[in-house]
Amino acid sequence: MLRLARECVAPTRGTRPAMKECVEKLWGIRRDMKETILVSSPSVSSSSSATHSFIGRDSDRYALPKIIDDENSTELLSP
Image (spheres, rainbow, N blue to C red):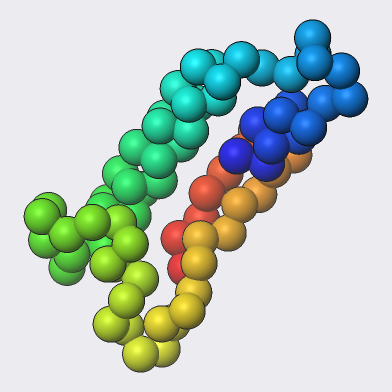
């Protein structure tokens, strides 16, 4: 996600990705994030949205996923 943001603010228009490409990447990130959250939280029902898995747990009520972005890979870690 951070890599995409960096591409979107490139200094010249020609080096920025097209909006269609950005949307496709963002939907892919959303899908991957949702799958990661559902796999790591087996107590969450399949009908719950990814956002609801963060709400209701007192100890980490405001915890957000951590993103590790280096030049070789981007990794999403659930709280």
